[in-house]
Structure formats: C-alpha cells, structure tokens
Length: 190
Ligand SMILES: [Mn+2]
Image 1 (cartoon, rainbow, N blue to C red):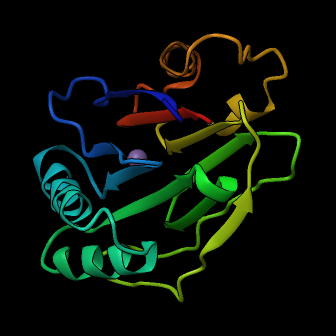
Image 2 (image 1 turned 180 degrees about the horizontal axis):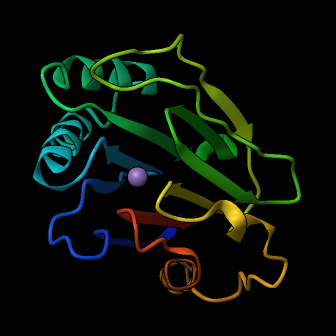
C-alpha cells in the first residue's frame, strides 16, 4: 500500500447534518483527497457539498483543473462551496493541489511544501486556478482541513506525527475542532 490515510468530520454543535464533506479515493498508484465546505450550514450546505462530491467521484481520474471546473458548473444554483483537492502520485512522488476558498493545507516534510488556496466560491466565482506541484518524500504527512479546524494546530510543535493518520485526524479534531462550525480534517501519509 502506497498511502495510508484517516479522516474526521463532524457537524457544528446542535446540527445533525454536516455542510462539510470529504472524499478520499485510492487508485492504483495514487490517492485523491478532497475537503469541501458547503457555504452556510445544515442541509443546504450539505446539498452543495454533496454535488461537488458526486463530480469528484465521477471524474476522479481527470486533471484537477477539470474536476474543479466541472464542480463549479455543478454547483450553480446551490449555496456554493469551497474546496481543496490534492492528488498524490507514487510514481515521481508528485503532489498536486488546487484550492478554491478557505481550505487549509499543512504538510510535514523535509521539503518546503506549502500549498495555498485562492479566494473564490465554487458555483459563484472561480478564480484563475492555481495548480501547485511538489515532490514529496516517503513518510511525509499531508493534512487538508476546513475552517472548522483552527489552523493553530499547524503551529503546534508538540503534534506527534508517529500515530496513524486516523489517530492524528482524531487528535486534531479533538484539540482544534471549533464547536461553532462544521469541521473536517483529512490526513494522508506517503
Ligand atoms: Mn466552515
């Protein structure tokens, strides 16, 4: 197995439906991970996020730019959503990322891998897409998170990267999940 991963996702306090959705698809020699945050909250937000999920599942083998463009089209007439999509490819150890709106990425690597998202909203206002590509190492850890997770976790020097990706996701959710928003974190290890 080329990659291991784990994720945690929970609705904001008092809600039963999350407007956040994550999708992780393992293919032959690659993995595609997405965090989607539907705007607003509750079922309307979830509706927008699930529409984006459908596109990702259907077109997961396409270039990231195509996936984003198709999701943008699919989200017309919804509340809209923000999204981060990352693909890791075992061959060439390549990481590719596109983010639209407030999705965070934190990478633990000896290399400087600092993907960023551009402002925008799927379904409403797509920025000129910025596709960032990096070369990663074995045992690097990639974390995608919605704004329901405080980005302060990235400053946490004590954060232990030895546990499994699922355990790390749980630890981040427990320590940095905000009760006032839907919260999602996806952790992948190469
Ligand atoms: Mn949010």
